[in-house]
Picture 1 (tube, rainbow, N blue to C red):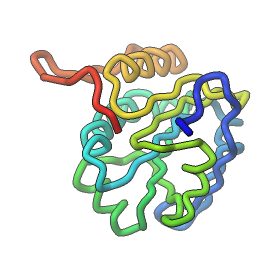
Picture 2: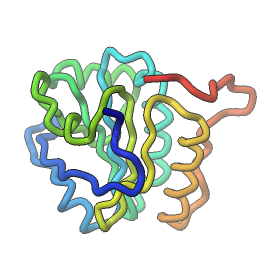
Picture 3: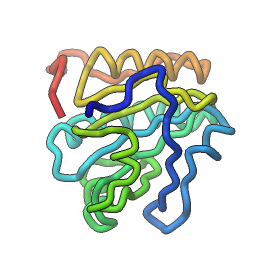
Picture 4: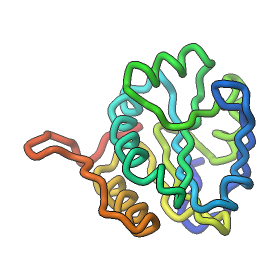
Length: 166
């Protein structure tokens, strides 16, 4: 089963973050839209794409117009090592390895998978793997929500592929 697509209601997520505090999608949606990004530390496409997601977080996540949450399919130690190695400061929660309740609820077959979930709980954007075009669309949508300019995701002359499957 592929990941849930735009137009579908997002299942609730209630997971612990790296410090043991509870994250609730339902509560976060009361403040605004949520970007939920699922990953696995050993995934090369996650390693490639998450620094770009971090740029979006730095540009739009501190506006209080959108909440960002990274959903790790690994244990705390692997997740913290991933975040450190790739410079990820996104709030991160743990989808318990072996159970993957959130990942299964969202129909994931591949990571990275990124969702923009609107305040009514509907998935607005669904990205599976790396898609330059979809990341640009997400950037533009987050800029519109935050009332700011889109983030500069790519440097001039940077060789960024259009697509990488997860």
